[in-house]
Length: 202
Image 1: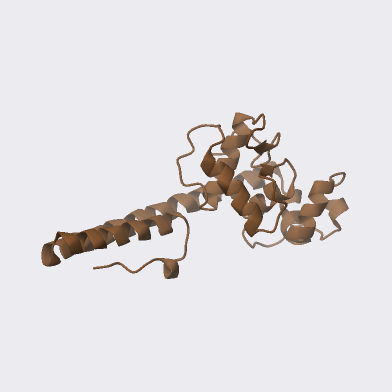
Image 2: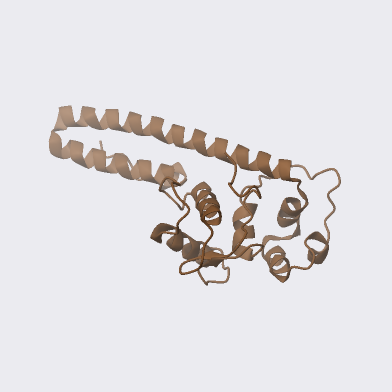
């Protein structure tokens, strides 16, 4: 499943609350934030909602980006999100670390982005071909599907343990256990490491 505008994560126009948002751009942005565990709803439409708006603001704050609630094409917020798709990997055969203007010419926003991300991470994305970018997006989506399947498996295990707790200790103890299982499942779906999950209250 690729981003619908065919540009693999690059927006055509600014996205933000009270803007004339293009539906494809909003859909793509929801997918990118979904990869980050910030957008929890199914991506069903291309309309901006409160969760997406909150995701933009919180992401900009946490990443020390310009806080305006807007994601601009070629801007630092979009590029920071796109850079998360890139795993550490060998440099392309013809990749040369260069100055920002040489990597992405004629774009002040891109130059500012490179100062934040570092020349290598943003440079690799900038020099990739469309098929290479598509492969990264496919790989990321596959990873997300596998991670969510693992979350489902662990939730089934937790639920079974809580059902046993209900049988042994009663409904109240079972309800506490199921509540902790639900919180653990939410943390897993959000991409939080297991060490940050609450313990299962068996």
